[in-house]
Image (cartoon, rainbow, N blue to C red; front, side):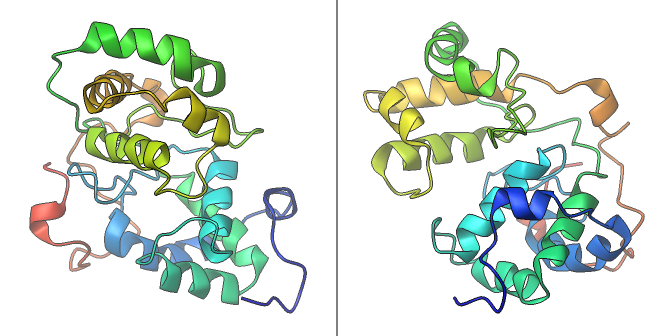
Amino acid sequence: MGFAIAAPNVTSVSALKGDPKKGKDAYHTCALCHTPEGWGTEEGNYPQLSGQHPNVLIKQLIDIKMGNREAPTMIPFSDDIFDQGHQSVADVVSYITTLPMTPKNSVGNGDNLKLGKELYTKQCQSCHGANAEGNNEKSFPLLQGQHYEYTFRQILWIKEGLRNNGDEKMRQSIAAFSDTEIRAVADYISRIKPDKNKVAESTDWQNPDFHDDFVSVPANAKNKK
């Protein structure tokens, strides 16, 4: 895990000016799972990356590279990006920020939205914002438009200590949450929509930077378009 240069941190990488044209090539490996559009999968196996704050993307890549977040399937890809230098990280993040978000992320069953709103307001809003907009400067993720199952799983894993880079304040806030409460707040979050100017015009939108014959995740794990 050694680095020929100083180990990366969010400040040092975010200070670099990313080149989205170069980042497009690096993103090819990301697109294999997260899809060329960066929309992830509705089943929540892979999160939507498009629309996310640059510092959040940088932090997660660094945490995976440094072993601070267990994500075995991501390790080869993060290694490949970091092996090309910190600039490569800035480049791929810069490219991801050019991608519009999906107009149709997955949501829960809607049974406990009042409870979900109450929990979000009391326990999540102070960090993630009233509209789940997150905070780039503090590396708090934007939650708007994220897939329901992915959000549910991450909250559950942070509560149970299975996501080892989870924020400690968040872990304490959700420590007493039941599975029903986690599903309720994840469902509520999944229904908070991003600004229209961040969203693709249609669910039929395809990333023009990738050829038609590009193969990403299995068809049964893709977003339904």
